[in-house]
Image 1 (cartoon, rainbow, N blue to C red):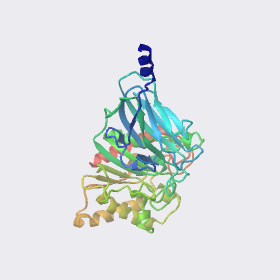
Image 2: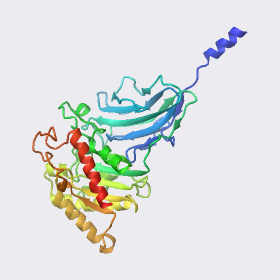
Image 3: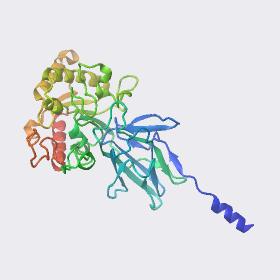
Image 4: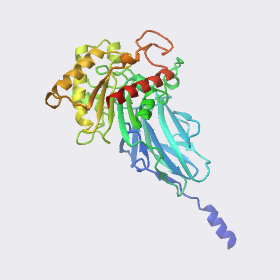
Length: 378
């Protein structure tokens, strides 16, 4: 009898816990993750933004990320990066041999552990807009039996949304000439420096080669010559809006920072169309972001399109609030800080491997410069 009981107890295997993506302790970087029902049940949190991240704490000895790999490429398309308990970063490429179960931690001591996870980079020329195949879809997490999530211990209270191009995506910050999945790094660029400086959680919505008017690896931000449903500032992709049913960003941001213009200049687009598009965006974002938000229309680091952007800002303020101007809306030109040095398509130099994308050390400096310029206007 005793032998039989022992056998029965040994045969009972503790069932792992599956945590859904809408667990309140799972903190997703704002404005990056589109949570939708998945085919076959449950929810997925999907993002095509390098620089998107999540933070959480978990109990137990292991953490496995559950992925939905539907409609994703068979060749390398994305790099993920994570740190458990503040240890050295670990990287993994997708697709991964682990398939739809990616182990992020195992064999830990019992207790509570922290996890910070990033989309490090992705192949910017795979589809991010139409079929949206260049995407991470998280279906949940698997923990030890009896384990659960708890809040990450350090989460800022305010929220920031950044719109930028390849320089916000972290393209070529490593400057090795080996392509997107080696040279690009969204954790070593200016966006994280800006967020830490302002003590805010940031959603970076940045796509290589995109502009106000230029389609790049995503649709144009706000090309006023195109239908409103193609204005990418408000969309996760061609199918899903980033705005709620009332046309608002959720959660309400404290800061919105816009830095497009480099690719419009590079593509030699009509300055009057850039100006009209920037003005239309200012009129739209001041509504969508809500009354608490400070909006920063920023000349890109290289100084491109400064004239039409300044004209758009002036036109907005002339008409805003009955001509009094809107004190929440700001114009930032970093020329006085010499932000443009080496970033004007001038060829390889100490600041940039290609003359337009800052190397990691310079990108971090630019984050500090931008933070200083923003703080001066608050």
